[in-house]
Amino acid sequence: MIYAVNLFDLVEGREDEYRSYMKATAPLLEGLDAEPVLSAHRPIRSLHGEARQYVVVMKFGSIADFETMMERQKAADVGRLREDATTHYIWTLYEEWDVGSWLSSG
Image 1 (cartoon, rainbow, N blue to C red):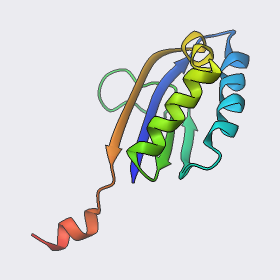
Image 2 (cartoon, rainbow, N blue to C red):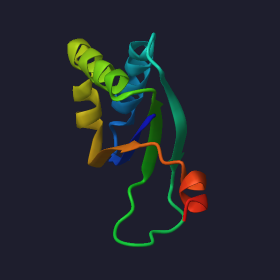
Image 3 (spheres, rainbow, N blue to C red):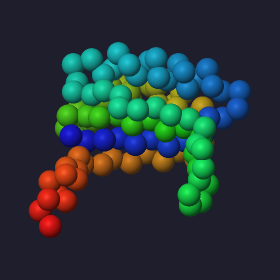
Image 4 (cartoon, one colour):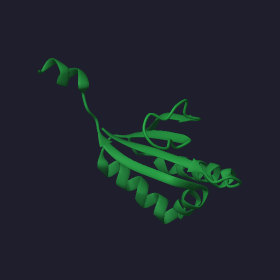
């Protein structure tokens, strides 16, 4: 499993563009092993540094599924909607970590 973690702020007045980006991306996930894990906003506190106001985490079955989604977004030209509607964007990929097995091995 691969997890895509997205932290960002929305540009005031451009919320509808980000909504359009999310709606346009949903059908591009068809046939892929991909699903949303969580979405949240309005951080309660920032532990270190400046918090982003929004977070979205997606789970992909493989890096190939993630790359396919990216190719589909590029072909559909929806990335510009995200770029225009967000700021302070951080997008990071993580491999799944079985912390339970890791803890029991030590």
